[in-house]
Every structure is written in C-alpha cells, then in structure tokens.
Image (cartoon, rainbow, N blue to C red; front, top):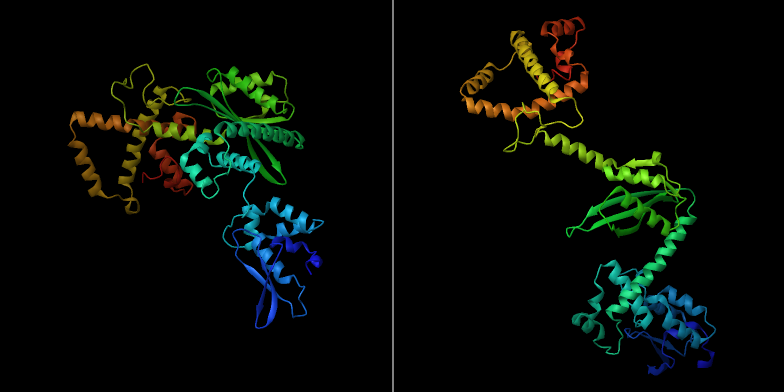
Length: 429
C-alpha cells in the first residue's frame, strides 16, 4: 500500500505510519515530521476515501506553510521532497506568519553553518550589536542549550562576513544608481565628534516609481579639518567609487563658508556638477533666522561695551545698516509713540484708554531710581532695535517715520481709514 503513496504531501510526515484499531476499524496514524509538532492524523481504511490526502494537506499547510508545500510539489519523488523540506525557507518568520496568520512562529529546522553566519551578520547590522557579542557567555548558553554541537562563528569571522556583505551591497547599490534613468541629487553634512575627529556623510536622492528614495552612500573620516578643498576631495572620491561622476545634478549643503569653497572646487573637477545647481539647506536657513532673532532679546553680558562704543555690541544686528541709524530710528519711534499716545488721549470716547492704568504706570516710572531707570533702558534697548529694524524694512526711508501725527490723522480721516490697521500703529490705540 505504501508503494502507492506518491503524493509529495507524505514527505511532511514520518515515512512509516502507525497502525491502530478503533471500534473494530483499522486506521493509519501519520505523525507530523516537524520536531516541535505532536499532531497525529488518522485515516481509516474501511472508508471509500482511504487514500485521501486532504486532511494531511490541511495540517501540513498550517504547520509548514504554503511555501514549503509548493517546494515539495516540485520534487520528483518523496526522497527528493524530504530533502527540499530540509532546505526550504519555511523557517522565514514572514512566511510562517503569512501561513498561520497568527503570532510569529519559528521553524523546527536548525540553521546550517552558512545560514547561521548569514543570520548573525543580519542581526548585528540591523540591531547595531558589537561583533564580539557572539563570545558572550550568556549568548552561547542560549544558543547551545539542548544542542551543544551548534556552531557559532567567532567575532573575527563575523567582522569578516560583515565586510564581505558590505562590499557586495556597495557594488549592488552602485549598479542600481548607475542604471537609474536621469540625473541624481546629493546632499552632504559634516561634523566633528567629541574626540575631535572630522566626519562627512553623503546621501543620494532620486525618484523610483513615483516615490522619493534616499540612500546613505557613505560616512567617512576627513583626514584634515573641514576645509573646502578637503570636503571636495572626499566627496569626489565617494562619487568616483560609485561611478556616478556623470550623474550629478544638484548638491545640497548647509550655509557654512567652507561649503561654498567645496562647491567651487567641485565645479573644476572632472564631473557633471555645476555650481548653479548648488542648493542651500532650507531648514538650516530657518534655524539661523530663529537664532538671529532670538539673540536680540538676550540680556547684556557683563563686561560688554555700551552702545556708544565703536565696536560691535551684544545687540549688533548682522547684515543691517549702521547701528547709529538704528538707534536714531529707535528714538524717532519713541517720539512718534508719544505723539500717538497724546492723540489717543485727546480723542473721543471711542478711543479712550484706561486712565487708572496709565496713572499707575506713570507712578511706577516716577518711583524708579536713577539706577533702576538705567537698567530699564538697557533692558528695553534690544526690543527698540528690533522694532526699528522691522519699521525700516517696512518703509525703507526713515523720514517716513517722522511724519507728524496731525498729518497722519488727517490722512486717515480723508480716506476713512482706521489707524489701528497700519503695521506701525497697531496696538498703540
């Protein structure tokens, strides 16, 4: 009878089934071939479907997965099917998960020596583990308990395997990028580690099937400091290793001056890069803007020069006009504020202010000592400079700021315009 069992599904069970009787009926009992499975399938011989394999197939699918069954079907016989089962990738967690649609399960089959080395390389790289973790006593105890002959590679073997995988992966990525249609975009970033070592990272950006793709090409140590020439040499070397000299379109960097030198140097090298395609990092620009603005509100440091000094001070504004002009604008702003405040006080009830609060503020001002008044002036000075800068950016000509309040008021009335809508006077009425 066993000679007629040609279906590859029998390969998932022990070759010789047990024979038993139940209520006078004879049956064959097939035990699952998986070491961790104790399931037994009975097939009664007194029925018309005595040769049916449907129940055997259902269990094999649940226990082994669809991939293992498909691999067994490609075998020429049971013997070859069993060999395929021993080598089948049903041990893949993803395949086992898809087959059972439950929590992750693991293969009953032990890894071969080559598979163990490959899995350890994958583990230490993805989980950022040190190579010498394989020498850890606890790790060895976990791996060898119940299977003392299990072979674990040494730390030097793992390191050598990682380098081999890296080299092959690097060549594969280079081929993919070289075959990528169109040009590629690159970005760089440089920094110095706490132990004073200079590093540089290079990423490549492109589109694949309508989706943006970002790949880290390399992180290298710059042999010298972050000079423009050194950065250009390192970047060109990385691009040359990947064979992408003729596929450079845009290059994104931050706003450091050495990057400008690097761009000029790269343009003179043998590649397809042009400085017109140099792009500055937008996020870095926003960060610089925020720092420059917030810095104007920092309190003065001890030992810094006063505003009358010729040297730049704590509150000097970069890329603006002379500080004396800003101070003049600040004074004009104060005069204008007084005029506007006087006009508001003389206005009708619709523009009346809280007299009690004004009196309270005036009393507090009058009660200040000379030292306290000087401290208040110094504290308010950064805000005045910033307001002066904003006003100058809005109107350009400082003469506009000295327009008389009467002229402003008559202009507002002629055009039926609310003076609170102007940027300068908003919040003052």
